Image (cartoon, rainbow, N blue to C red; front, side):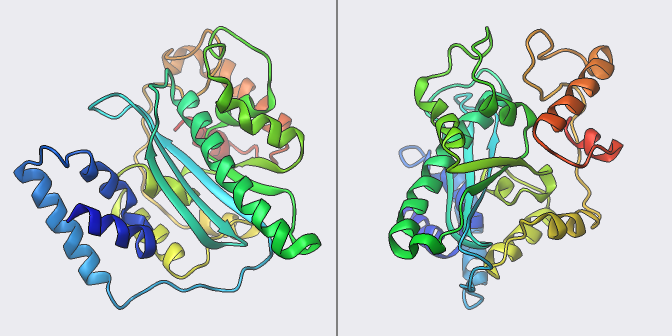
Length: 286
């Protein structure tokens, strides 16, 4: 049953990739709870039959991707990679996959997810080169909601917190240096790949589901700013910081708030991010 669901979800219902991935872990030893979850998933899919997905003409021949990760799940403490790849806002590929290793921080998990999505972006970019030639708009764009992970893609310096990361995950640095792609910050609530990694609130799930099914995911600055004006109720954990800075990881918020606000401002300037408002800074803590 799960195998059939996986086939359907991969083709027509990518927003269900996360729950399908979780159910697939219990092929050998399902319980009543797993059967109940599977029944609900099948019921949701049955209710979506007939709605379908629209394959729209892309706004431009440019690959735009969104990536996210869910840090350290309960069972094996491995993180989850999520990604949505689009061609000019029209979805072409989605992924939700458990990472092969245990990450030591949320930023490391996001960095590994970035590298995985970059591989798919490069693959699709090579296909467009063959089909379109000069009409293929380069470089490709990847949206990421973790400032620390973006900083790692631009900083090749080895530190105590990064020296253990496998060479294969630094793949994205070479792609950025060759100007094949670039990475830009996006707020978590505007990150479409969020539904590929974890359970989200209903309003956020419906919002991302709609954008995927109608074949139009917003990605330019004007569209995202308009979308950001909509009120979305999201609970933000405030216990720990989500920055990857030597000496302050896992520190209490109140002890390093002033220091890290200065760091965030410098990071935004280094990454050429224009929005340095208080609201934008507060969103980097989640």
